[in-house]
Length: 557
Ligand code: KIV
Ligand code: ZN
Image 1 (tube, helix red, strand yellow):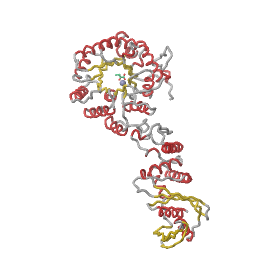
Image 2 (image 1 turned 180 degrees about the vertical axis):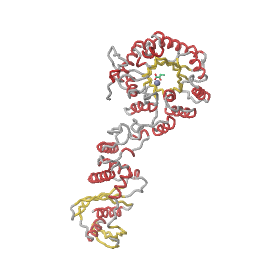
Image 3 (image 1 turned 45 degrees about the vertical axis):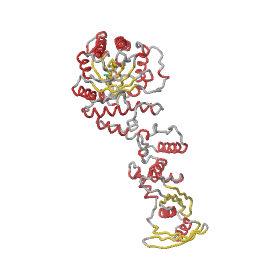
């Protein structure tokens, strides 16, 4: 039965911004105030929530990354969260420039217990919430608008009362109309304005009003319109902070937060890699890195993304999709041949032209900036182009294949991949290239050589070869060692002409532990079969490298 039940659904929220939106013309130019909710929203959504030790370690990690506001839990809701809050405070684990944030319902006993748990802390955000949506009012609380608003304003007053009992702490207050995205806009504004009327005169710090997309129920542009409208209608906008907290039900948690920033949000709540209730929270790493790759400092440090991955796997214990932006195993891998070609050409051009700005197709970020390796960028399968193979041989093994040779090597590697019916990794590609082209000695083998004399350009070369298990000694004079060697091989009835010769030093930085070698590339034309044959010689001696290349070609004929 096909999906026919769409008629059962309505737009959860049918609202249009009455005046013109302006956020569509804006850009994100600075980092918002970030607030990590990993230890609260994220942790509460885990099948096995973090234990005390894990929470402590994760808190330290969040501080290290650069979060200045961290929601650590719901201390009045569980003994573990209470103990964790006390542990951080009593062990002086909260740096002076970091505010811990705790969540509380707008209920007297819960608020009192929350304040108790915070005794002795320096900077704290108390985050109070109640649900305001039509469905929650109707089905859950069975209260009208005024009654639900009263829950919120009573909670706001209780925060002020309790704050007075603990004057040593620098208090910040935050209010969330939970299920905001399914709340009527003017009602939401009415509720938050009444809260601000209580808080403005009582607080020395700007109050935070957090607008959660508790459940995403529209496209992100609608949320942005809502935030812009609120910004235009909230009481004394410049005396308060607008925060957003998006979940990811429609897979647009990141876009929702980004568009909300355009629309005026000063603060973004979310979690690393988006762990949180159901489909998760907005992924802060993703939002921050999106800023980074457009030239804006996100003020969070994800330079060691592999460590982040390890921490996530250790504490959150959830798999990371190989396609997850910036972190996923495959996000710096190009499978398509044309992508590989474009990447390799652009990286080369950037290097040669010493271009300062990153400008590489298919790689929105330089993987090295987040401690990812170039190594996995290229994998070769039967669809890959020649560019990918030569890029890999050059960057990982130091072989600078001549342009004219690239196509043949590309086809050869594709052939191997086709026969194996699978993708080849870089080591396998190198091994296939090496056994086919480098220092081949299957038919004729060089046992020894001796440059007997050099006069002007004439070189007298003596070689010992092994042909069909028989050793033969030969000597010739030629215009250089290669010429003399060619003459020797011609005596053995190998009939070919030289068409290409070049030699360079293997690039040491990338040559996987090999000592720097002279690498010789040759192409000969076989006069009998009228076929061109490419080959490669490798040796620490430049002469031997050349002789190896010639012999390798002869062996490939
Ligand atoms: O998603 C949500 O609405 C929340 C609130 C408590 C802010 O997590
Ligand atoms: Zn949430």
